[in-house]
Length: 90
Image (tube, rainbow, N blue to C red):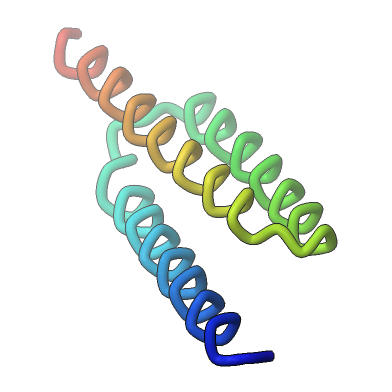
């Protein structure tokens, strides 16, 4: 692995760590008003993300996994916001 590859790997690794940390924060702090079915929906989507991550890792395509991770994080934020709005409207 040359310097540029090493630097690129470090940057992508840092991005994955940042995204997973942000996802963890959302999950730990923002799901308290969700119903069981909502949690199962998140669980199912998260399982799909894990499977996608394993696939992209086998294909040596970490950038695609980062894309999927960003999309999942955005989806979770939107989903939680929608469910919170429903919770507080009732």
